[in-house]
Length: 151
Image 1 (cartoon, rainbow, N blue to C red):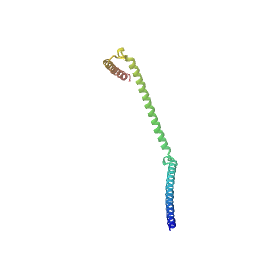
Image 2: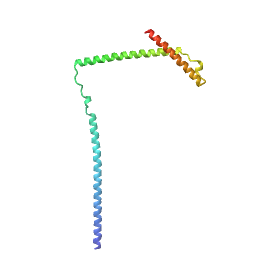
Image 3: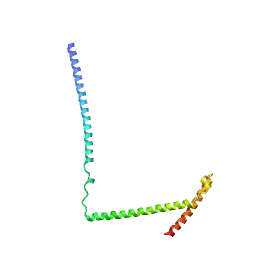
Image 4: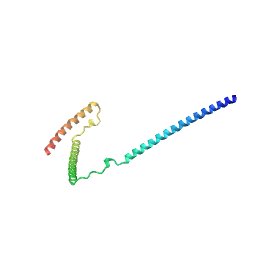
């Protein structure tokens, strides 16, 4: 009977170990299957995204056929814009040249006093700035009068 009990216990232990082993094996299999399915889905998503990038988009579709009148109208608009751009660039260059001329004239008109080159106090700095501002206003007034007189 003791042999039977020992055998019965041994059988129970073996069955318990077999069931636990089978459950662990089943859990491991299920987990590995879930992980491999997840990675496969990620790869399929990546492939579908690449296919969407590669697929021709409507923006790259061929342009509709245009008539000769539309082409001529577009050319006329482009020519007008090019002329307007050229005119604005010429005006800009003229304004820049005028500004350069004015700056050169100001530099020859305004001579800084020696005491303003290395001022010894804050008061001297303020006096020099005031003198420069007054002379600049006078220069601008004369420049404007000379410019309107030339035009």
